[in-house]
Image 1 (spheres, rainbow, N blue to C red):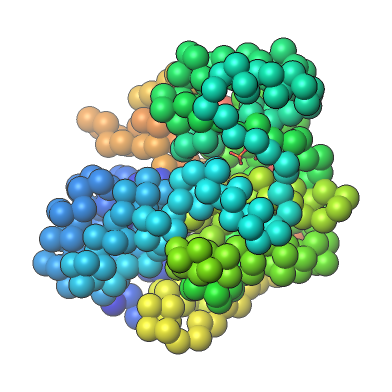
Image 2 (spheres, rainbow, N blue to C red):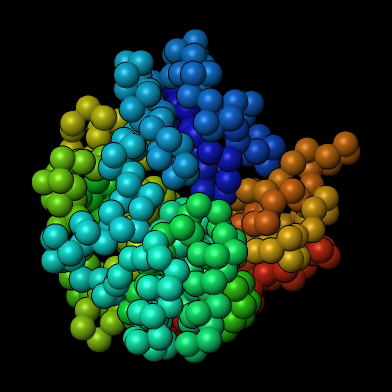
Amino acid sequence: MKILIIGSGGREHAIARKILDSPQVTAVFCAKGNPGMVQDGIQVVDIAEDDHKMLIAFAKENAIDWTFVGPEIPLLNGIVDDFQQAGLAIFGPNQAAAMIEGSKEFAKKLMVDNQIPTADYAAFTDYQAACDYVTEKGAPIVIKADGLAAGKGVTVAMTLEEALQALKEMMTDHRFGESGDKVVVEEFLAGEEFSLLAFVKNRKVYPMVIAQDHKRAYDNDEGPNTGGMGAYSPVPQISEAMVEKAIAEILQPAADGMVKNGTPFTGILYAGLIATEAGPKVIEFNARFGDPETQVVLPRLTSDLAQIISDFLKDQEPELTWSDQASVGVVLAAEGYPNDYQKGMPLPDFNDQVTVYYAGVTQGTKQMEASGGRVLVVEAEADTIQAAQAQVYQALSKAETAGYFYRNDIGSKAKK
Ligand code: AMP
Ligand code: GLY
């Protein structure tokens, strides 16, 4: 099989690597990919994610068996609809189904209609009305830009002042552009966070092993929200019963609800959850694999990812098996991220105890260099989270990381 992957980050690097592991796969192309992928035998294709015409032409010319979409933006741009219209096989939600991620209000309505547990909320387009509501409710309270903001359009406000400041930035200063014209104000949920991803086809749900991401930039969950600074899997402090409840009360009704809605979902459904005292509650749905969750979940998949996706596309029963190994992945970010960040640093070398998934890297004149906020993920697997964590941090501490930063506590929340 020849496979095309859309996207260019660490998540796509992990997906491509896993697909390339399959004995049935002879070539994996990634558009646009990044130069860090090349050393693993992934072929990068210089076509932009939003150039559906060129991507379709490439898939046809190269006899691609099927295409897999990594990021949300092409999904929301209707890349699945366009490929299917061109008669090409592609795995991912169509534009209508991707709205589960594209609009927080769409997702909230799905949850309310299907009794899926989530935080109470209200949506506003009027700045004054939003301020009045927030003032009435008080802190802690959560303010979210309704549209996409790369994981950064969320303020968990511990004081009323912070909440009002966030509303001002989103609604009157347009810090997130149009994404902030509508805001969702949410009840604050207390508890540990975990990510539960599943392969979904219409009403069929095949859950993956869970992971825990770390959204804040700095140690001890301090600093601004980011796209994710590191993840680990499994998450031993989240009980099996909590996960079972999340599958039965969240993933399954979400898949069913999408079918009832007339927007059936096929692809990767990602539930960002909080394990509250009353059970799991949804903080967000995504219509794709998570980044960096994918970099710690896929290494634990012991069955053939290419076969799994082929099975979904042919309406056959897929086989999913997982290892008991623990995986820890730490993001190496450019200093300054998630705000303006440094670029052009050489990429550090790492020992061969770890796997490196590249994201924000570019080919400089002599060598590869950093070009994005999240530059790469260093990942390792071991018998325990503590052992995997030690391997990753040993590799990072020996590397030359001037101009970079990383969190030192990824995996530390796991119960010993
Ligand atoms: P989101 O982009 O919706 O995933 O939100 C980013 C981060 O903000 C989440 O990963 C949580 O850490 C936090 N968060 C979002 N919504 C809530 C909520 N209702 N209660 C507590 N924390 C939240
Ligand atoms: N790691 C969070 C996300 O991919 O949305």
